Length: 527
Ligand code: PHE
Image (tube, rainbow, N blue to C red; front, side, top):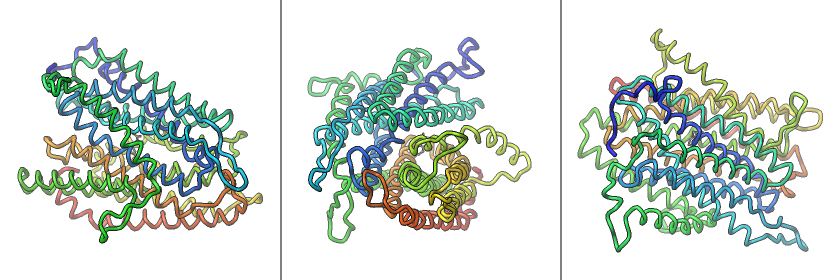
């Protein structure tokens, strides 16, 4: 179907936005519900139920996170060239439903038999396969549902920005509620209940999308429907795509299990895990493609804008490298050395990850007011300055935690209020950096390669996941099913990690600050 570029008819609007926006809002809300509900539990599940070491848990989280955000690069391209967004979302959501329900199959808990740990290897294979389904599912769903939001509005429609703000709120609504409920169920009644609820959430997302797809009015259809029908070796291209994606699951399944293996491909390069090799390969291909495009097809101004965008993607990589520790080292720390009682109740470590999305929701109205307010007074910081500010706040959040490690109470534990404050500070950073860097992608990129550059942004966050895992490992502890025997020693380890992370935030903030004048020049009038 053709892309419709006309005004949206009044009977299609709800609160000033096309009905399709609400379809995307609720689909993505449920998708993020399942995603973050599961992620909140993942590290604790590995360490407490399957009795893996901290290193193993962090490595797996890193590999999983890296693949989850690397595949959207491919998923976005496939939808662009062949499938169209609607079909990609339905396919991705179906894989996600299976993946999340698969996670609910926990098998037997690991046990120690005469000093040796015995694990349910069969259940672990199902676990890895479920994670692969989630990775592939996110790859098809995540980039495309956001693209649909953009397509619902005619060119230059001023409502698009507020549409995206609403959509981001949907993401965070899911990310806020999920850890509270899935975390509670998982840690109180049994892991499978937490993971199972995530599956139910994803099923709700799939149903919402299937029922609501009619409101997308053809905006999310393939731009080349004839390509989909084209037969290759007797099978239509569309089915080849599904088939190849399903076959590739085995590759992801294998890669994921090698998260702690180091691979030396050539002697002069460091040995890293196969997942990191994959990331490097995708980066190399992307870099060659983008580099060639910049040299061949861009004029000087466009080339400089693209360079500015690449620097911004780096800022995102560093910021989320610090940020993503909230699901690894922050969870471990809150579980082990924190007095988590607050306001008469006690939240579990996984539940506390809800604080991130909670503060985003709280801060959104403030920031929606702040930027136009500063703009009107001509003191709105430029995009590169906002990158520096975001990184500074990430550093500051870790500094709050350093302070926390020096302020344990009479029981030797850290008060949960430090974590609340750290999240609050971190989210100021996210609100300053993340939406602005995403909008910079759409503004600075040459139009023809926007999806590719969005892919590059996602690839940046892939590396963030690896960075977060590597950093967390600085505070890997020997535990007994997640329990530490020496709390003071553990706090000391976390302190070292937090000091180092804070330094990364502050030093990179200074580097980006120094780059501001050059970046402004490169951006040629885009703020
Ligand atoms: N937290 C947001 C989301 O889940 C933004 C984000 C995307 C952050 C990808 C990191 C990586 O959509």
